Image (cartoon, rainbow, N blue to C red; front, side):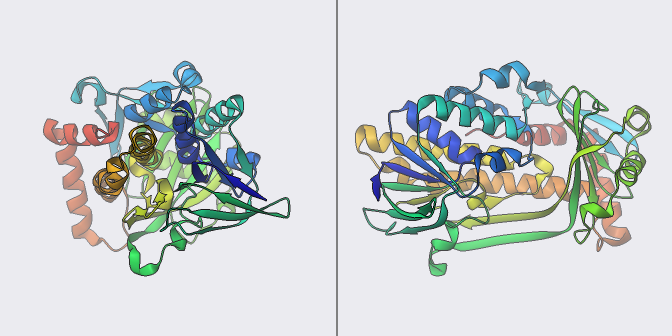
Length: 392
């Protein structure tokens, strides 16, 4: 069975869904293929800090109503240095910018609901997906749907299928360069229905390791602690996690910490990764298919959104005016912003975490960097500008 569309999108995470919605509003046909079920996609627990540009793009897609009602606007963050907390005034240091705390799961749900309401096609549990002829004018995608072979012909393919998807590995090795750094630790994350310890996020540098106090709502908290990359969630019963988190917080936050049963518990490895270029003929990579950042700087979802912004602009211009200048510039425009976010995420990770091979000298340098940061308006402004998001 053969089907045809203008843009085929592989992956129904936020990148693929946001691109699909922007194209739909522009009158451009798109089919989304997803190898997992809708329920599986919605069950993935991910980040929840949206840059102002990302929130604005979700509004542009017509999917921001619930986000604006239920999301929490944060105008600052706290950095705890060896038990003393310092506030970074994001709003004051950036001329009025802020971030929005709204879970990625909720962003995904809103985009899925909008796609269903629009009657736009999404194929879940698409198996054995392969892409062909993307260097030519007639890209094709083969897949199985309920055991039956399907062929999707299209003008362009958007590879939004994540780090482990099929799109990037389909590119010849000689045509792509990969840059990667794997960090020697992971994040143990716990989601619990307990009130947050603070109205704003707390990033803690401690001699026992990093900790982060985040939230999803006024009654649901998301906490992380640095752990060994080889550890497993079952190595950390709830009581052990809460005790260790409390030890890494400043006295005020530790006193306010409310523990409870974990709704979800997982360990995430940390890596920095970039693939370039991001265009191969009529195949375009976006989001985690092209880059990964350590979660410290909250840039993963936000970088995916800026990729989608650039790609949607190029595709809309192609269909409206016949110009491919936007598509041809997509990779260079996206990578310019990606590398700046990679730098920020690497730097923020390096000053907050305990590195096993840093030694006494490295630990003194890290402490000096943190003391300079919280004592310098210029340094805090640089952090704030990057945290709220560089312009698209």
